Image 1 (cartoon, rainbow over the protein chains, first blue to last red):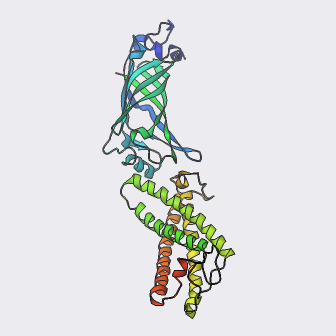
Image 2: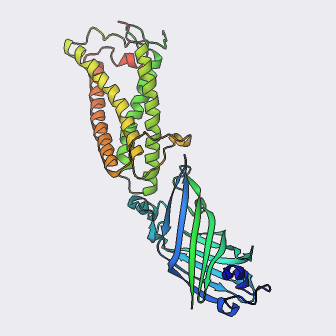
Image 3: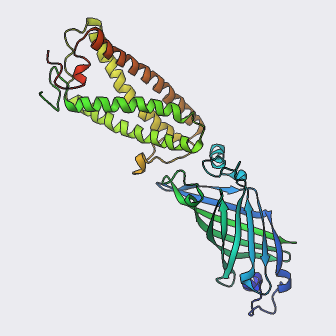
Length: 191
Length: 190
């Protein structure tokens, strides 16, 4: 797993980068387009009495920019189209798309724009950014871990918790937790 | 005014009177709420009204259990002499049916939420998690209990209408104490 040793920071000019790294820094730095194939955005919400329900967003796009001089200048932009939400239960999907939750007819996009990337380990980073949903914007933090690196492709595992009440989506609390757990795999392809 | 908690041979006590009106108001309110909550366009309001309907359903079930227990320990007062022979036979049957509906309606609603594939938890008035009945979850079972709850509701409200009609007949046409004695224990001592 030379890719792991190389790490996220190495991807952006880590001095300790092993000289035998399989992937040259110049190959890693650059702009990546998040592709839906190889990527997934899953979420789970806990339920009163135990258990929870989960789903995923089927439609999204975005970019990852790896800066080759300064990791903190790396950037992630992600746009999720909540119309594509899927839970495996059609009635719940319709409810989530309705104005009870996403109001996807009037708010077709959920946007995340990173404002800061801070390295937390060899292959990990804390990504801070502005999340906008239903016209409300708040700062959220996500943990990113480099999960794969091949020439021209970069893969991150991203997790984080978002309080849905702040975005006017507090319906169903306290039956359903206010905390939404995100678990994403984002695969970016260069160019 | 002689106020009594328990029933006597000719009068209802306060406990029975309060339970009667409380359950009556909730029962009719639940019918209206149930009717509205599935027809309202706003999904959020609909969801919240359904949760409120579930809360009142469990409150109703609790009050009915209390009422049945109280009734088992307190015989209902005898019907006034003005009540005719036919009604003397019909009234206990109607009252028994009313009790049956008061129990069957919340239970069928509980069964409905228990088998629903939506798996929405139940928290009466957001206070605690009410466990589901041990019934298998499926779309078919949900359809069945939904229909059962719906038919029971319409049959139950028809019976309530008959009950109210009979009470008003006693009060305004027969001018006896049947309705008055369910309003205050001071009535019914004839």
